[in-house]
Every structure is written in structure tokens, then in C-alpha cells.
Image (cartoon, rainbow, N blue to C red; front, side, top):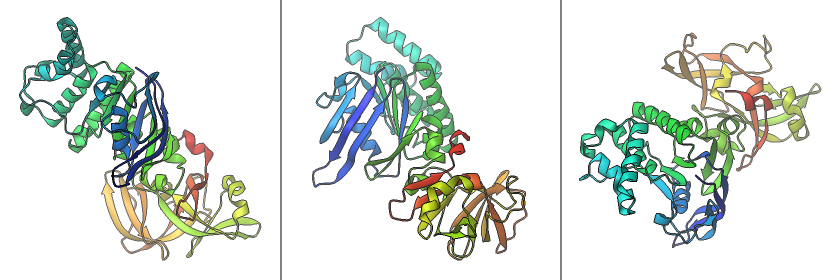
Length: 379
């Protein structure tokens, strides 16, 4: 396996559209890195640049110690797994697995050994004589992954490989890909639009928007300490709630005024926010940090509550998503225990966990100002 380094990479198409802008990333040997973001953010284009399927218009790409900008895809020593499996329908599973090796004139004994090893890792030994049309979607994707494994490449590239599978198979294959990575210790770059996949698979997550890296870091850091409002709203389900308001000093304390109520700024955030009294900021609260009962550390303290009107309740087993609103903020979500007795259209005091608040600039970029440091260690 090998380290993969992208430095100042850009991709501009004919006509002037720039899909990737000043992309810098160092993927360590044996690391699993996930590119995640909405459609059109440039994640697949970046992956295709690493694979050599797209030519970069700026910057450099190294795989191992080798500059590969002008190296054709077949000579980059990478293996790519596509969304649509890309299996040869007229070949058996064994022939699909071995095809790339046979084209490269790999000795027959080595081919048999690598195919047998890949089949064992993926649990498809009993399917080697079957054609792709007789396989389920999950089985076909296993074959596609196996075709990459037999190559024994320096780097594995996955381009939304689970998009065509149903929800149950996605979860199963996600766990399988993670297990394979842990067994092979392979350098892996994985592209997905599904932030749950990104959070569960990656050693590091690269969040992209409009061809630009918004944040790169371990999954829990990205979740608990988002760099800006885009990351905060994109990573996490349900998405983070945002309250626009003003910071005001009252009685020697600092308060966030939402418009219909106010929330005290917790002690840990005062240093970062103290000089911003009188200015507008955005307070972010994850649905999991809102409850209809006080948090134990709050006791009966009402400094971290807002009155919200209950609009919709969605039951999700032992939890439920409660859609609520204030006069100023009509689209809010709380993720709470399902046994709570909430009546539609009632107004209820909802409590915020003061250790799980985030604060952002009120401008368009919405850069993070403060997030509680203990959240780094939370699961």
C-alpha cells in the first residue's frame, strides 16, 4: 500500500466550470478517508483525478513516491470499485475476478491463489461458477470489491459503491467493507453522499462543497466541532438546528436573544463570545441536545429553555423526532424519548444541553466561533 498526496489540485472543464478548487490532502498509508458532500460538490471528480480518469488542470497527485499526473490509469497501481458494479455479464464470477490479472499476463498459479483469497475474504467461494445475472445486488457488489482485491493495488478507490443497494444491504456491505479494510490494511479513498456511511467508515472525513474542502478530520471531530454552518447542517441526522439572534450583556452575564426568548451563554463559551456583545450570531443545537425535560446538570434552571410549539411527531421505535417552532424559527427538530406525552399544537418548554451548543458567525460563510471542547470525546 502507499501514501496518496494531492497538492493544490484543480479541475476545470471546457466552458470554464471549476469542479475542484485548490484541493490539498495527504492520505496516510493504510488510512481510510471518505469524501462526502451533496451532489455536484466535486467528490467523485476528485476521485476520478486520483484514478487518472480525469486530467487535472492544476496541482499534483502522488501515489507512493511517484508523481502520477501524466501516468495512464492502468499504470497507477490503483483499483476502483464503481457504483454500477461494472461486471462482464458473459463471464462467471471467477472469470470476472481474474480478468484484470489475465490481461496483465500474471502467472496462472498466482491468479488462482489471488482469486481464492479474495473469494474467501468476501465469502463468495460458492458463487465462482455463476454469472452476474444470477446474483443479488449485494453479491454483485462483493464480486466488484473482489475484483479490486485481487489486483493487490497500492490504493483502493470506491465511488459510491452502495448507492444501488437497499437499506438493509447497504448496512451489511458497509460493515463488510470496513472489515475488509481492517483485514487488508489497505489505503482507501471512498466517495459517498451519505453522511452516515462517511461517519461509520472513515478514519478521516473530508466534507466538500462547491469543489472546496470545508473540513477534514476524524468523524467525531467533524460531528461535534463543525468548522462552519454548512458542515454542521450536513453532518448529523436529523440536521442541526440554527437560531439567529443577538448576544447581549445583562446583569454581568451574557445572553443569546433568540427574539421570543433568551438562552444564557454557558461559562465555557464566554471567552470566545465575550467581546461580541451587541452583535448577531447563530446558535447551533443538535436535535439530540434538545429535550422536553431538564438535563440533570441543569436541575430546574430555566436559563437554557425556549418555548416551542409542537407541529409534527414522528415515532422511530424508542425515539421520536419532534418538529416544532418558535415565532422566529419555524423549522426545528428535537430527537427525544418516544414515551413522552406531547400533544400536537401545544406549546412546551424545551430544554437545551448547555454543553452541546455551538456558535457561528451570522454571515454567509458561518464560520464556527465556539463549541464545547469535551464534545471531542463524546460518542
